[in-house]
Amino acid sequence: MTIVGIEAVHKMNEPLMNKKNYYKALDKIVVDTVAEIKRNAPVGKTGDLEKNIFIGEQGNKRIIFVAMPYAKYMEYGTQYFPVGTINAPRARTSTSGKPCYHPFIRPAQWKMMKKAKKEGIFFTALFKK
Image (cartoon, rainbow, N blue to C red; front, side, top):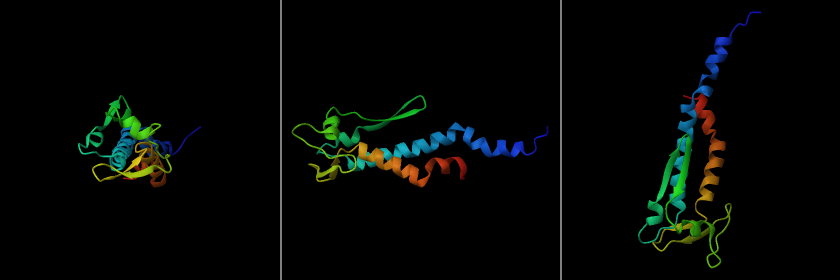
């Protein structure tokens, strides 16, 4: 049996085998997600919450974390401080005057996941130059 054209198939699949292409697209999504989280975050007079939103790496994983103890209350609320839902976050004005949302992290993640799918970010990273 003779197989003709297999080199072209290998060449076409090279981008799928290059993990750097995946990480480049993933890093763009993570950076854009952090920007959206900061845009949504409540900001008091110190701005500590917004200043403490970071991207970490654990091997090939990218981790977004907010290093403020009260961030979980801004995200999930308390019995005295209700928040909205991912699809309908509670809008309010921060003490600094900046518009913000509660929750502020999950809606940003959800928005960026939908944007990545709609714009075909991974497809573009793998097949378009």
